[in-house]
Length: 342
Ligand code: PLP
Ligand code: COI
Image 1 (cartoon, rainbow, N blue to C red):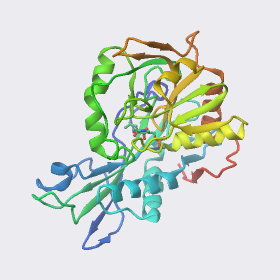
Image 2: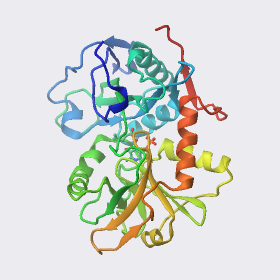
Image 3: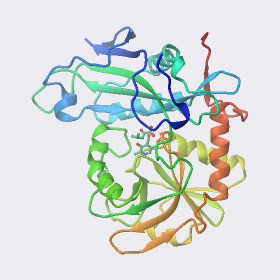
């Protein structure tokens, strides 16, 4: 195996040993297959290619001090991808197949689970695509479900350092009753123009407003958003955002610490009264926010006065990492432990 500089990994693709696949055909899911090919043989008229029948997930496996590999909350990702499938008329993958395939993908690529202390993890990317040839706009009858894995470092290159984000009204990522609540590839295509514009201007992400009224906060690029206001953890309640498993976990950890949690509509103007903020997601973990600039009004909300991550964000981040790495007791039963003889 090639030498990997674990501590300096970015968030990118690296070839690993194997990926696992399962096909839905003739009304049923087939056997789980293992391959070392990085390619898919796909019909040129497949619904995934023309009409965007593509959904995906993202979860992580971590190596603990004890050498054990832990996969974080895979049942939640199994449920969410089944919801995404129903949302765009694809075939939901049964939870037991999802679980078996995630575990298999990790076992077969165990040597790519970064060492404890490196700060890196194994990113697990399940995806499902519509495979059958259709020219009319209708759902596929055949689906491929595939899981690839790749070792990753931090999503934002700054890691756990505050970055600036921006609000812009020029683009919407999703429609009010659209696909934002599902993890559909098309949502990310729709976010690229705004995301690239934000990057060109030096921002790490766009903080989207609700697409209907542009009054409330929605989410932050490929992550949810939370803030600390009057000592409370506040996070948007919206029908156009992805229900983040990281956010759900942080809300639980906040409650465990005695911090009040409010999931509600958050007005843009409330940003003037927050003391901390972060983007949270599997890839982003909890990435602290320094400043939020409204590109249309010129208002700048300075969140971190000293340029440091806030104390509550830091505590929540450490607690979440602690559970994921096995340093903190997993009282909610979030980890699936994979035993491998390496
Ligand atoms: N929101 C969007 C749009 C995302 O792509 C992600 C990433 O998966 C999240 C939020 C965070 O979700 P999770 O914490 O389940 O990874
Ligand atoms: C994740 O956090 O897992 C994501 O899917 C975000 C992004 C890389 C699309």
